[in-house]
Length: 54
Image (tube, rainbow, N blue to C red):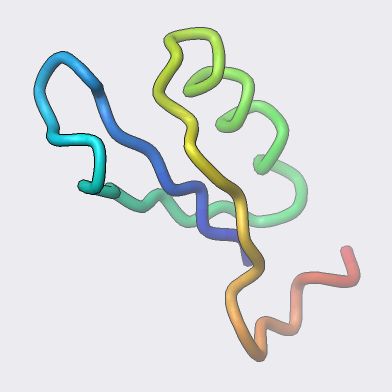
């Protein structure tokens, strides 16, 4: 699992982070969706996640 940390700069202060969880199969599409809107701030692995290999 991956954490896609994001915020909407029009609504949230710069330090605020919202989190979407994604498996390896959906990390790219969700990241692209957020990045296209300028919302994606970082993508980090969920510690201990068994799906990081896939």
